[in-house]
Image 1: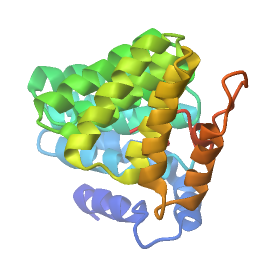
Image 2: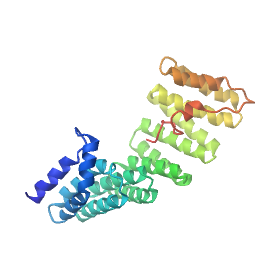
Image 3: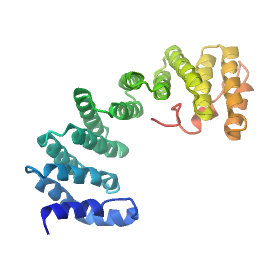
Image 4: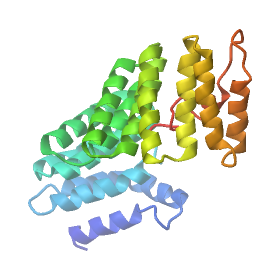
Length: 282
């Protein structure tokens, strides 16, 4: 069997589409050294693209094999091929895929290193994908408690999406900035960014549930500053969007509207899924 065919067979073997994850996991766990060896064997003229293709194909299944040392070997092997082949697209993709796996299992240092490199590559080469890296970095830093860096990443995300003429994405990015500012105790700044997101969503016809979630944040930040009537106006708008769309969410907003100024409300609408206005990190 030629080395070329061997690599193609390995790519097919780790493809999760149409295969049981447990079966792929068992196969990969027994042959992970062979996979890295196959990537390394492609380090020659004309074969590096095949090696980076194999490394990229492995990552979705690699996350099932909880062996960080092997992840590091796979990451370094694939990234080295992309560098040697002068292929920034493949390099950025491999860095992102590896970072996502490291982050998922709590290795924030290696995740940060790869996402920072991926961002540098995409910026230097003018490649698409800056938004996904900035979003991932924002999420990583926020979960890490490094809120200043998270704000910087999300502000960068807003700039990229605004520059791409993506108003819906810009609004989502502004909401992420607002959430992070709020976590950092910068309530007034958070309110300003939620207000910007609200305005954009109103112009772009955002999904009612998404827009309502931002409006709940708009109200929360006002409530925390003592502006109770203004908070209730935002919550009333949110409720109007949710009626006949999501009764559970509507009831949670009704509970907010029933809160008295002397009460210390919780915010069940927001804590139901995530602190993020989008229910997660985009």
